[in-house]
Image 1: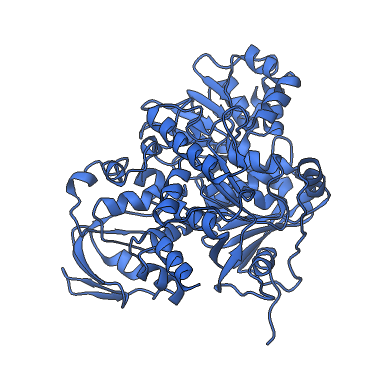
Image 2: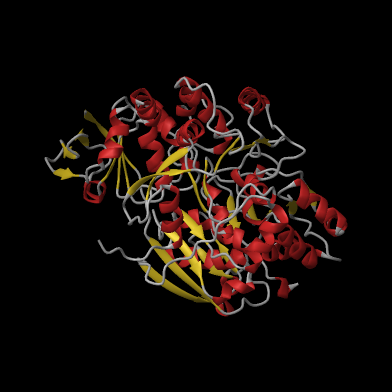
Length: 422
Length: 165
């Protein structure tokens, strides 16, 4: 039998299913290198796990549980949920459990702790689990029952996805980051443009993107409906993994003759700073098209854009300036390590002098949980990933998704603005 | 399995944040979640939904967050089946895994109207609009997924497999 070449994702899945070849549409069972859950999804998974009568997890080192959404706990019910998780973690002996104080936003935390490396297969009961594709891993979001089954068996079933290839060329211009690139792509293909598929990024433009930019791009693959987003492994990936992990990694490359359902070429030098208007991430406008949109809140943080380079660019723009009197600006470093680094680099001095509130790591406002909920009629510019109806608070509030540079400039201007307008 | 109910119809890109807003995710009690199902786009949903009712929606139903609370809230509301043009992939998995019947059928999803009386034969993938006599066929599930559905969800399936070993 003659097989067509495989994409990077297909190769990783084939290897983890013990198969030489896989084809799109094939249903396979793959061995998992990491299973993830948070404080919202883990309680459902744990109760399913217990109901089914399992007594132990498949591997205490291959499960990570990160209470990050409603933590530090915002109310009694959410505190009870984390207590329920904590008891399970202790009983099972799960090693990678991160309490408040060590905790960070899960998808910033796992790569930083070295728990995911190139070639891994990871599932997480959180839709943004696709973030780790930046490292050359296959990772995808699932629900709680999948997490429960995975904790019991160490395996998950997948339908082998087709792929869309995105060839990134050229060098991004001033103020253009990974966020602008992925918003540009979602604006182009739509929120279901990659439904059930892989988004495979390739091309010489990737060499101009740091790891933080790649995490941001892979993170929002789900916002185009994708199963995963994935980057090839290069010197920057290897350097990142050496700095953060002792886990062995494996580099996969797509075959020359791999099949793609679509191929897009994107010249990064032509991508402009991009903002997604309410209430879908596909409603994008470039910064020169946004018009006069007055805002009330700015949030800089989340699994999409709470990393150190995000905070650095925000600080660079805010240095010596003041947050507009009609705006509340909240900065949320995504992990304790990023928090400390930002503090040591003096970024907090800049933020505090500008009138910014700095929060401990949490998903908090991104999903309308706590720490910055919007009232009726209020508008926020957020570096987060979703702007659905009611996402950050009242159903008549609005979220505009943007990069940290645009968010910082908007906080100063009191309206959606580019740093060049300050 | 044969299902029958009145249709509650929605449009495209119904996301899991509106199916069950995050502010209610500090619990995972199905009955509690059902009280707030759909309230951000349809505040009357909870009061008008009747056991057996069927949701019919456009494309990309269930996009966004992986929260399994979304299909749980729909199921606990009494909805017997969701028919859509397409489903977002995590919602699709979650629905199969928890035993909420779903059917992907663009023709039916487009043609069926709010308030129509619809019957569904899940095993055959047949959708009957009893209001106007139209009939549709959804693509059948692959055998493996049908086994999960037959085992009343993924946990039942892996338990039955564990029993075989």
